[in-house]
Amino acid sequence: MARAVEWAGRAKSDLRLAVEYIRRNSPESARAYLSEVFQATRSLSTFSERGRIVPDLNDPAVRQVLVGRYRVLYEVHPDAVWIMRVLHTSQDLLLALGRRTREEAEGEG
Image (tube, rainbow, N blue to C red; front, side):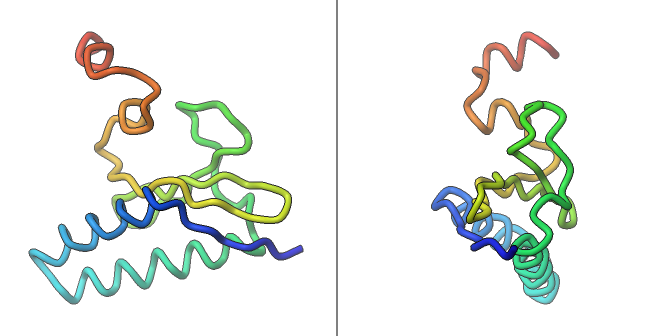
């Protein structure tokens, strides 16, 4: 069964920032990256569970696909896939998702 693919506002903003960052060095690479992201997320309509469960979250509803150096985080629902965030792999995931504070993150380092 095909699911709708919906983008959260935050994910759209993340993607825009990633593309702007890549564009600084290579407009061509930015266009290619954007195309890869859209191709990967469109495929989630029919292959919703192809991404792996995010180990840091341990929630079977939250998955990720890697596109270049970015994680595309999404939730699988019965009728839709929600793209939640697009985050660089170097970002602290739990901090970016608001699941821990900066002080907690700095205390681990």
